[in-house]
Length: 244
Ligand SMILES: C[S@@+](CC[C@H](N)C(=O)[O-])C[C@H]1O[C@@H](n2cnc3c(N)ncnc32)[C@H](O)[C@@H]1O
Image 1 (spheres, rainbow, N blue to C red):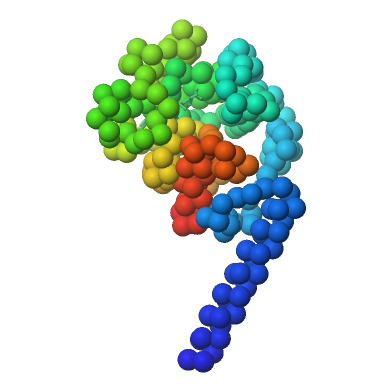
Image 2 (image 1 turned 90 degrees about the vertical axis):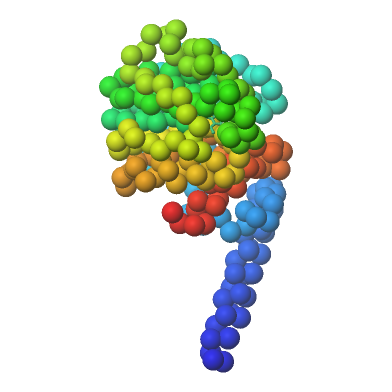
């Protein structure tokens, strides 16, 4: 009994020491994460750029980035080349993995979908978006970006005449993937923490080891600045903490 209590105390001490050092390192790096992120797994690796990513996996191909929207800056959040880096990341993974099946959650007008399709022309790309009436009825969560009309959803990729895309109209809160094994998933639908968590859990059930999940708006450096980024990071953190 005494030994059990002792070991509990020392485990508590160890945890506190670990958090102290983690906070210290973050402070030195000039990063201020809120307390709920203090237990992120130590194996989280931050990459500087796409060359780092290619090096880690031994990849050689560079993505096609031919959409002018990638180079635009619409708001504060797009500063520091955010759109270019996002597109490079998604495009590089697509053109090097060449997945049989890739899934995008959150089509919007279809720019991300087109990027995925162009960079992996032999792949089948499924893209899911909620219909506006389900957003209005409140069933689609809160941080939904925009309630696009059915005609607007995927408009860009349809104009690009890409043939390897299949549109699905559904609310991921109730949609169950029925598209076979998923090799790459790009999660960019509702940004509420519970949706990010649920979308991830659902997708993982259809993935094999070695598959890729990409979360848009997962940026630990911006959790204090943007509510939706904080919400997405919490969803990803919850997945990592549960070790799903
Ligand atoms: C940020 S936008 C996606 C941008 C797109 N992935 C791109 O790269 O261009 C988010 C999209 O997710 C959709 N969405 C929001 N909640 C959803 C839900 N519960 N199920 C499916 N789609 C959802 C929104 O309607 C919106 O079109």
